[in-house]
Length: 212
Length: 222
Image 1 (spheres, rainbow over the protein chains, first blue to last red):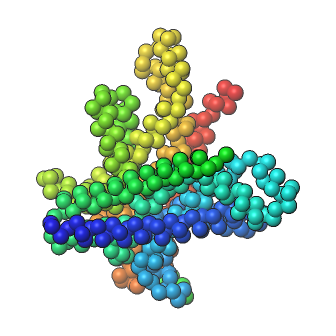
Image 2 (image 1 turned 45 degrees about the vertical axis):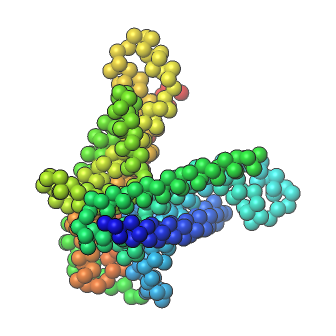
Image 3 (image 1 turned 30 degrees about the vertical axis):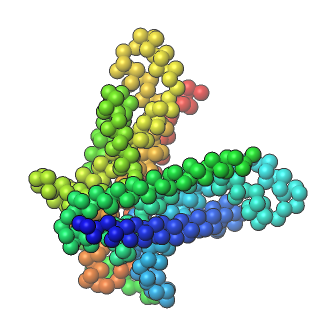
């Protein structure tokens, strides 16, 4: 068991990288989807609605397999890590879009009207007025989503990405020490979730000081 | 990419059988999780101090762990305790424990949102505790409980897909077998996704209907 921890820590590092990469996809695509969802075009709104409904109505594991087996057909190489990043990020983006939709709806209408009356373009209103306030207001919900994202990353083990769960499974297959290995794996996940919650509490305090 | 439907028609029966097992597993796990959730919520709201803390610790651990890790833990460790559990039973236990913790949180949230004056007034009016629960607490708390519980029900339904990793012959597992035979992964997973999507839509629709029904009294009262 002496060699167990370094191997699991290497897996945990891969889990952290996967979580961060997927979070970037998630927030980026989430902002795009919410912009479509709230846009003036009926077709854009319908597309966003179908996207959100599909991502929330089907298992993330099936979405991962669709991306993993679908990317090569589109001419993109099916590298497991990037397929998992894309799938987990795209899944989380639907939830992020819904969180942001609520937060943008809660920005007082006067903000948008004032920005429009001083002649800001719609794109600038989004970028400078609506999004910053919506992102700050939805920080607790986004943190919660980040821990959910972390807890989705073990799915990557299904396409043989050597993250924390997959490292654990390989070690169990080799050593038959399921109890101890799973205890260590669980402990590492609990530490990572705890770190996300703490980091966001710190971020929230900072934004609260800087904010109005 | 050309779409050929023969891989799906060839394995239609297996896929339908897998989907049926997914529905059964979801229903059973949901029932077990609800019982565990009610127990945990009761323990956290009115248990003695030690029980309250134990329930809270359990919920916190469940919420910090990925469900796949819990499924693997139940799969590897429950049989080692001497219980004769196959993958189906281990998987059901894992999902029930995991979602039981989340369901208890949804219930606790709705109960905690109730103004304390409601219970105080009912107690002052001399209502017995059972009547307070049945006539005062539950009618007001059930409405706000439905949306989070509906979300958890859909989550549980989707999460049964993870049981394919411990070789439970549910929908995704049936898909994997069909793929190993036909090698048409994209087509088969697309059909599987549509199956889940449709069923999730039915669950969401049913939840909306139930929510409208349990909130009817609000319109009458207004």
